Image 1 (spheres, rainbow, N blue to C red):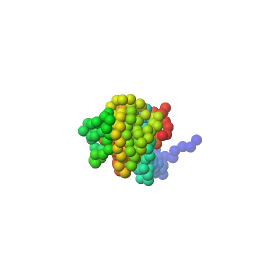
Image 2 (image 1 turned 30 degrees about the vertical axis):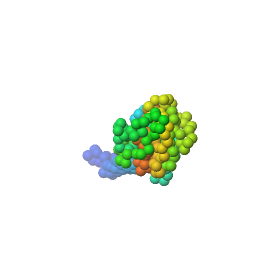
Image 3 (image 1 turned 90 degrees about the vertical axis):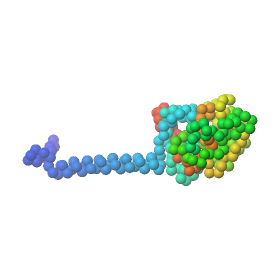
Image 4 (image 1 turned 135 degrees about the vertical axis):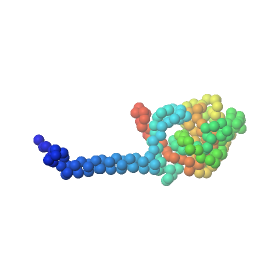
Length: 218
């Protein structure tokens, strides 16, 4: 059985003390590198987000966590159907910003077509339902895109409640994206505060990792 070599005073030899110090320094270095990599990944590649509300039910529940691809926005645009994290227009969460609500339900009511020019610091997650040049109208919570009623099996039915129908048609500006929550009767989205410029997009959600029973990819 091997024994530790001790010096005359009963302590570890200088060689063993140096070896212990080297291991500690190595461990600290590994921890620092790991933290740096985690920071770089979160800052530039993949970020995690917690779902704060029920606006994306039944696709995403409150408290569910998703992984968001940040780097993809540098090389291309999200497509219709993608779930995207973004900064909404300033005031998106307050009544005065609801430009699409004034005539909601009327035969000529239109969803909001012009975004507030100021970007909010808030973070929203919604689904892309229209891109630059698309025409958009809303019927019973479902999107009519370029004159065609979209097949949206993932939405919670809206019925005839608030925000369910905007029969008037608007055109999404080039370089912008129209966002709506899947829970159409309970989502604060582009219907009320307009399209979102590409510069305000953070990334596309591509997977969910919590809770374990909901693990999967989109």
